[in-house]
Amino acid sequence: MTQDEMKKAAGWAALDYVKPGSIVGVGTGSTVNHFIDALETMKDDIEGAVSSSVASTERLEKIGIKVFDANEVSSLMCMLMAQMRLTALTK
Image (cartoon, rainbow, N blue to C red; front, side):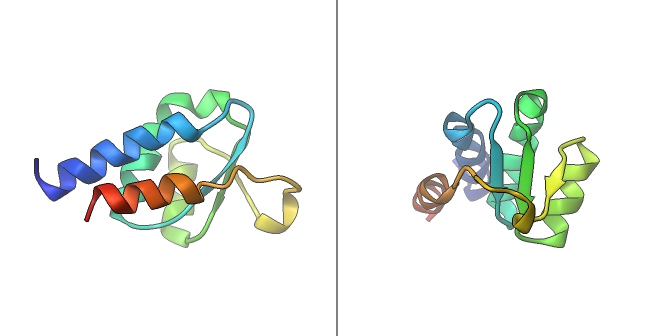
């Protein structure tokens, strides 16, 4: 499996951590790009996302996911564990 294939697999695996109705915290980078692609499959099941970069914001908005300012949300589904798992899988 190539490194990009591992990143893609990790991005799709991160969907297991996304709860319906949540606002998802989204980082940036090549693995997160795969996660955003995967997130499109459940965009109607989440409230939206908070993004850490302009690039991720643009990708999310392009696929129809509402992007909130971090100061607007009172609760945020933390993707830290998923991102830690992504990092471990892609190293």
